[in-house]
Image 1 (cartoon, one colour):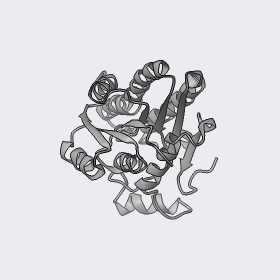
Image 2 (image 1 turned 120 degrees about the vertical axis):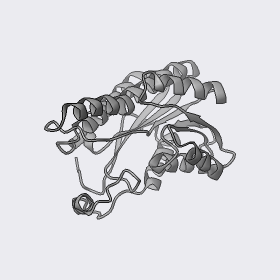
Image 3 (image 1 turned 90 degrees about the vertical axis):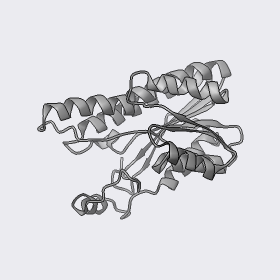
Length: 249
């Protein structure tokens, strides 16, 4: 694969799957803009590891109103035209309908802001530029929960990722005429800092996966790199499941 023609903004790229995506894309020649929220040192370390193909590190809090729009504007102002966007940043927290009101309201507000509103705003900004450029690519990191839902105490996460998947399909259908390709990934657990470590949660999580293990961040990076390669543009609107067989549809 050759990604020499790609300049990609990866959100949440200071760690985990985002860092793996940034490194994998750069290894195939893409120029990478690394977004981070609070961990500047980690973002700069990833940038140093990537080398010359890491062309910027940009901070923005995507939980704040307008964060996605500001991030795109900062990135374009610093590096010039961007023809690929990977919405990887995401958060999860309990939103238990049987729990406290404050937990419920705060969780829904934060999760929807980071997991849905900010990616939607970034997609909007990208689409406006892509129409002028005549081409562009978007990859949205959704979730297994987009299809099957999540546990009862995490409904906001499932709803946010389901909304992101529906947004992806809508943009793929509506923007193809402008040369825009839109893809989704729907992973289950990924072996990152967000994965459970408590045996009471970890053991059942692994037990429901026929493959017997979580996906590795590098696997996510590989699929994103393939999507951005333009090797199969007819796959636009597709969703790639990677959950070890734990949800087959």
